Amino acid sequence: MKTWIAFWNILKKDVRNYYLKPPNISWGIIFPVSWTLMQLLRSPEHVEIIELLPGLMAMSVLFGTTSMLAVTITFEKKGRSFDRLLLAPISLNMMVLAKLSGAVIFGIVNAFVPAVFAAFFIDLSKINWAAVLAAIFLIAATSALIGLFIAVSAKEVFEAQTFSNFFRFPMLFLCGLFIPISQLPAPLRLVSFCLPLTYGTDMLKGAIIGSPAFNIFLDILALLTFVLLLFHLCHRNIERKWIL
Image (cartoon, rainbow, N blue to C red; front, side):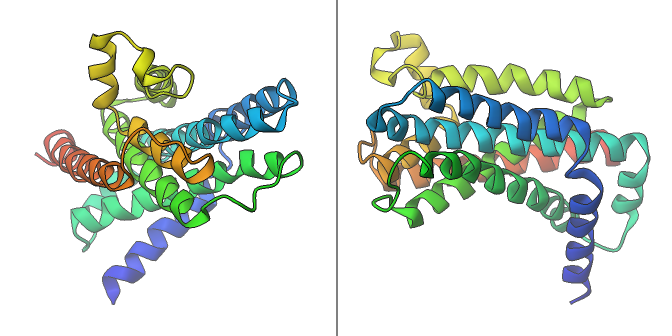
């Protein structure tokens, strides 16, 4: 019971203190919103908007979650508050889970910004919302873990955001959002298969427009594998850099 009270208080603190920090607003909110408006306004045809929606939602999750972790972890490292968390009577796994939860929530909220704007232009009633929610959650979880892995090594917020861009932008262009995977050169296609966003975007495409490249169970299995692998890497990185 005390563990879950600690979990809740860490999550509540992150929501209260970090959601509206300037880096979160610029990268986590303004960038996805401006990109969404740009794409929707330049695509008046309904079919084009529905085809853009999976990519816009995936991008909003990616930037929202990674930005959130870059801000929370980096600020707490500078203020030494993360050191106090490491000394608290709570397991490292539970503490990391609490930090990730705030980023995941932030990313999920961001994901529905494009859907809200798209609702003014097209009918969204035929979308499989259960599959959309599953895809968004898994994309948010993998993106948050990537953000945590980067933030642990950064000393300043701008460093964490810069390092994040080395991962975010290649994933955007290689996961099938702008160029179909089948049209990529063979070496880049192999890289695409190693990116979690590829499978999350494919799940969203299947749920929204009904044209996935892979089987939905393969997408879920791949994303869960990425979650476990990234969690292990983050856990080891925290122990190596902050504990030992």
